[in-house]
Image 1 (cartoon, rainbow, N blue to C red):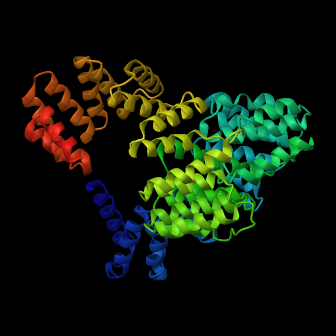
Image 2: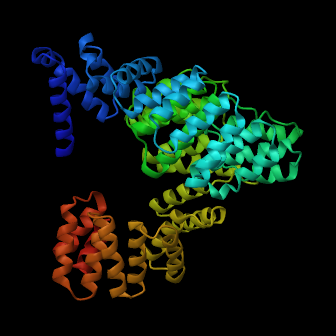
Length: 559
């Protein structure tokens, strides 16, 4: 909090100095500070309102221009953002977002020579500089120069998305053998990019007449009815069925849009959504306005950042009958739920299901929403409808069985819960989340402990520093009577995910069984300081008052 305050104080001081006259600065200082705070909370629409109250002379200061640029990129108003970028660059300001926006604007205008001049004078960070240079060379008609830019960057840095760029260019030029060779294996790419790579591979193989290989690769695609990419994926399937080729030709703007959105997805997957990823998705959207999936990417990012009103805007024109309708319904439902209006969220899904009663994914979303609304039996019934529809198809989803298993468990129907979790693992054998949850639940029920240990060991091999999985291993070891070893795992879990009441309660229970009753009581006291809610909090209170055995007995009697 202090860091944020001092950053803001510095901005204010710069503003006062640059404004020329202290009185004028004070006149718009309040709006500037309010807009600054709004941007830090990703409330770009509110920040825009404050900026609109500022007098024209306020925009003679770089601090306000930088802030305005962030705001209008957040609201998706590129023309306004370009204006502020031009004014910043004319001042000699080196704000990187201004340079990216200006370079993108030159791209949209087909001014590829100007792009090269701008980047030669002041390069962007890697890999953006290579992406802009490579695609500008392609747009300017020099395919070889474009390939060379990507080839050099790919060899020097080993960034897979640059190989993806090269493959797009080869495919666009009809050099399909080189395109498939350059693209390489899907496993070489980050998960955020794998469907895009698969789509390109299938398209190349299809155009080569290698239908069996193309069909085998197509089956590796993972998408749902509520995913925006469903529409082009299904079109690709139609081409496979009919044996007709697809158009792999691409413009420089489309190519750059694909790569900017790829960078945004990769950074979002690794670090979470941010203003930077929103800006990249937004620029990609302006480069390729025909790609509706980019509207969804912008909307989803705004939702993740908590800017709910703005999140609705990119998809507001998608209505029943549109091929992207189900995807829009899912996203709208999520947005309204996050605003606290679960009734509106429920209504949206129910209306969509009246139009698409056999949509497996809409049924899953409705089941998930009913779960969040604590409508357990209704949730089970809804998810079960989706599961029945998916049987005998390639649409059986592990998450449907997993969620229904969770519901059965909370409803006390253990046999059905366990069966669903095993089915979920059958569909996705290496899913660490399912392995951990099933293993922990077996341990918690003190049954099939060897099997539980194998499951949790597999989960930890995939995610060795996951504090919840470490806790699960400690718990199964405790159930096996390996108390000292269990304590080591539980204390490690406490270090990874501190202040988790359930983990602390586990540590206390092990101490009690070891005969260290005072240490156990201290741990229970520490657990209560985290203010655990519901049953867990009550159980810990009783254990602290009466000890492990008597406290647990009294808790079970209350239940």
